[in-house]
Length: 449
Image 1 (cartoon, helix red, strand yellow):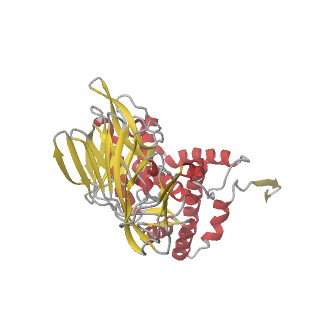
Image 2: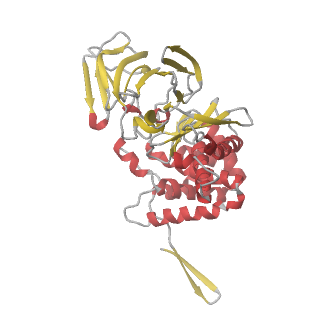
Image 3: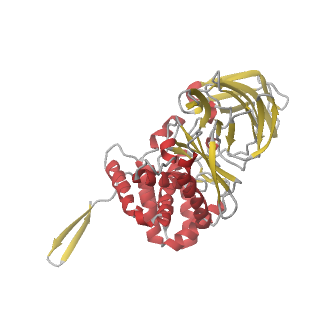
């Protein structure tokens, strides 16, 4: 359970957390993640126990709680209060500025991928530690307050409202999301009744209609492709004025730079239309590949990004065949090849040993080379066999975590092909094979360098 009270004038926030923890072996210590937070030490409790030691390791974003005696085995509740600053770094829990009626105002926004949930609340901030989240926000009554799940109920006390959200399914901390500000929206519905909205600043909602159309179509297509329904009751997409990434696939609440989500029929270019379509399709693909089934650790990031890049092109080609998007995809493949030819390149799958290393692998190798080898694998196995195998993978690891070898194992079982032997060299080695061909009379001699 997580409670947060953002102050959009002072640009601070306070909160409390109650985490259900399963203690499976004797220990006196709890080691979790927290960074740039002031934790009220007198508020910390595990069951009835107070810690005798509270130590922060800032470089690692780690909080160690030491207790005088062994913790009781089994499930217990860890509680603490904390406060922090709505920063200007566009990471963690931060403020974004916008204009309303000629005045500058602040909105509160989260960006947690890869390891910045710890900047908002104490938690086990690793993708394998999935949990169900039950969020409560206390915000000014006139503001829109969004999170991953729909609102369960809201109570009003003068200028303040307390918003309680429905409990989420199991999800990783980096996918938790909150947005608080003034917005308007356009709304649509999928064939299965999932409500989809695009939120914009006041006066810009018409520019969200194209993204809404692509979003609804994407949810319908992915539901059929993966043979797995979208597991949440709603999906919101929000245009944020200050946003470091192009977009972020938070479960049920996807955040975007304005330029990545909004399209104006009167002034936007054709290339902008394509960019919005690809970005929306990419982020919504993550609702299955990344959110429903999440990589076990950041070493397997390419499972998220490579597959979302590949299947977003599949979706956009279905919606807009006149764009010849697979021909354009070759430009991305070429970009990846160029980067992969450098000595400083890295394999698609990179061993990550510390949180500080993660951001370095969000590049064309993980995204574009990853997508290219997936398309190669699909061509080898055949589109129908590949799709059925991916649906099996999605069902097997839903609401859980997987690593690359788990995917290969499912594909091998479903197709009978030696997928692991075929693909391991592509994912674990950097660079790519170079073939020399020589014409000698009526023959061609081929040599691999």
